[in-house]
Amino acid sequence: MSDEPLDAAWAAAGAGVRRSLELAHRSLRAGGLPVGAVVVDRDGAPVAEGRNRAYDPPGGDDPLQGTPVAHAR
Image (cartoon, rainbow, N blue to C red; front, side):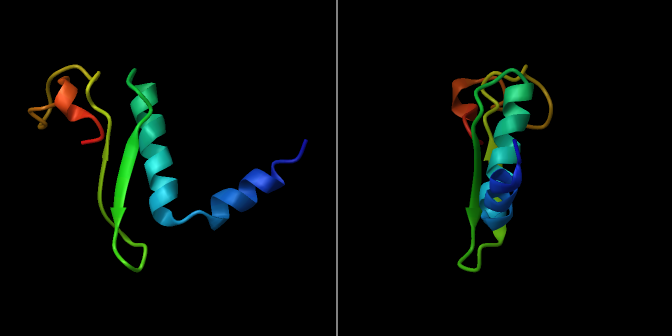
């Protein structure tokens, strides 16, 4: 089975879509819900991003990490 349709869809997706899926995957690998979010400007360039950190262990530089408020933060 060829990956050509998937490769074409990935290439056609905007930078914000691709990055949000990458962030969702990172969240899933960290043990959380697979949620990523990217805000883009009118030209499609990412200006802000975040991922679910509600299930990450507390710590780091994010005071909300490990709390329910850290969903796609």
